[in-house]
Image (tube, rainbow, N blue to C red):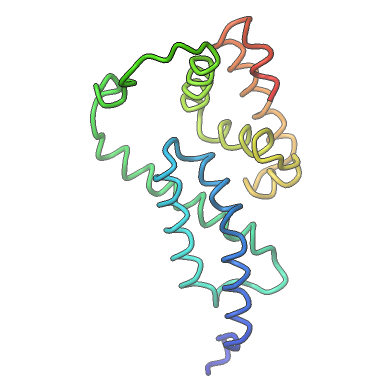
Length: 176
């Protein structure tokens, strides 16, 4: 064993902690990905990277923050590659619903989801962390590696943008 490697029992314990955080990772991945299977792929990629580099994790730091940082960086790296590949137009037939929904709430949810997906990454990420995942502004700032004021302004701009895009009737929907 070299001096920079951790004892096997410590590495096994950290790997167990990583496994215990999978539900939180899946929730966080869904803030990035529209499709559940894409979120699962992102979680799997994050777990592979984390477990292969677990010896680089510094004891005494927050494992959850380390994993979320790996996930965020993986997502951004994947987004750069995807943008270069440009799979097709936005009006592709495969993205259209196969049958129209008759329920108004379902249509509003689709409109809300589409409006959120059009937001800049930083705004969408902080909005979903604070509103959907229930993170405090402090936790979101730590995960995004920015100031608390930046998180607050991103969330505020996100909510204002949703109100603007969804119209006056959106007030109740946007109070997330």
